[in-house]
Image (tube, rainbow, N blue to C red; front, side, top):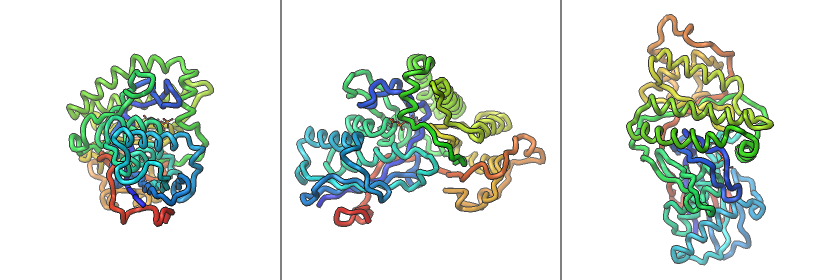
Length: 391
Ligand code: DP6
């Protein structure tokens, strides 16, 4: 039996991917740009084993077996990596005809509504590539893209662009690294996980309906995104947080404007999400320049980009504006040394009047993370499979 075990990170889009021009090949109508998050805080972990004795391909996600044949995206990723292996002279260690067993885990709660498909498919494709000795290159990103569009951006660390491409077969719809995590190492993020129980439209069907019914989406794809992508690349290159923050917040707002322009509309943000938006604008006003930028994906959680040096002050302001019964606990503050939050540094007598104070307990918890590297392979002792079956 041959195995490989890897972890892959989550990425958070700055310029959003929203809308496909080909559903099956997952070809987007516009470029997108993201930041990869530190895999120590949030990641997917996958083991793939290949053996002559396996009767069929099988897959377990968070311990539960998933139907393999019925999952077209999963099948396409496996076929895609095997095709690349053939193009590189065949699997070097064992026949490609051997069946595989796959086990995958997320180390963050999927119930929180945080996108897990990007890290999951990136990890699957990267692990298959390690098993079949396929290099990480543009072609591999075209395979991850066919698992979930945003997954292609999780194959690299730092800042990553997914170029929409123009060919019908998708061969030029690839992800490229703009700069590694070391280029802007003090770029941090606070994720405000919002209490919310509503059932929402998933990204795949939400963006499909947007392409079919939104009158604004083509304008966004052809006019707005090309200009913003160009400007954001310059902002990243110059480490210009002000420009970075402006583009990021406008991008998030436009994604949700398009969602509302969809018919029937898709509503992803809730009242708490809008309170987070207001809070960030109040905070930046008080700071005298842009110190924080929000972005929201297809859900209510707010992701705040902030430089390392501003994290303690921002956190103290969040604690003030979003009071919570659990606010000093390690369960509420994930990835934050708790004493750091007790500091109310920089807050004067009038600080409470700067911010609108929200109702108690509107946030479920806060995750502190930062820019991070791409996927990596782990040793066999970290395997999620024993004798080809989940632990
Ligand atoms: C809002 O990659 O989950 O997070 O390609 O249909 O699997 P599929 O969609 P998915 O969409 C992510 C959309 C987004 C924005 C982004 O990540 O760019």
